[in-house]
Amino acid sequence: WTFYNSFKTDLEFLDNMMALPTIWRGENYLAAYEYINYNGVGFIGMFINSLWFAGGSALLTTFMHAVTGYIFAKYTFPGQKIAFKIILISIALPIVGSLPSLFKVIYALRIQESPLILIMYLSGFGSNFLIMYAFFQSISKTYMEAAEIDGASRFDIFFRIMLPMAAIS
Image 1 (spheres, rainbow, N blue to C red):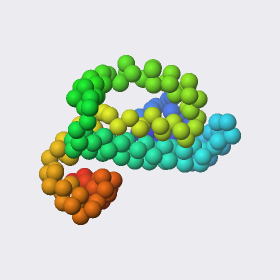
Image 2: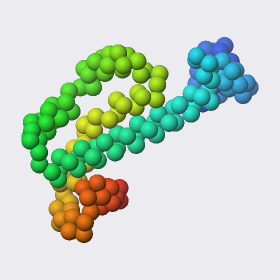
Image 3: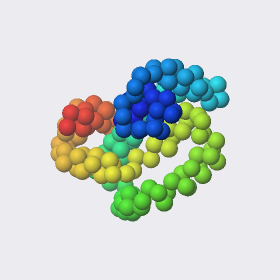
């Protein structure tokens, strides 16, 4: 519906939104391409920005959920139970309630128009954390022990054994 309406004139759209265009006007896309400009950034720049932002945020959140899920599932440390409860409470909070404070932080740091905005995806907590936590809980510690016997560091165990197992599953 949106696609075929994008080929109409304004009057044709207002006349009948559900009808197909009488004349398919491709110049609407050319006009939109020329019109779109924000602080000197055109359509192509915005498209590239959207791609790196979507890709970067997806990679960062997936990686951080895997790291935090792995740490909570396989290691014990002081304050672990309290931290886990805080994570569960933060997951239970509606996102609408936390968005205003997130925007305040973003604007206070002046990263709203910077690649550094991806920092906000580095928390590693959320519902995906629980999925990664449950997955790493289900993997036997014998994989870690065998890798330690072979001389693997904690980073090697995570990156060369555990993370590939999570990626395959």
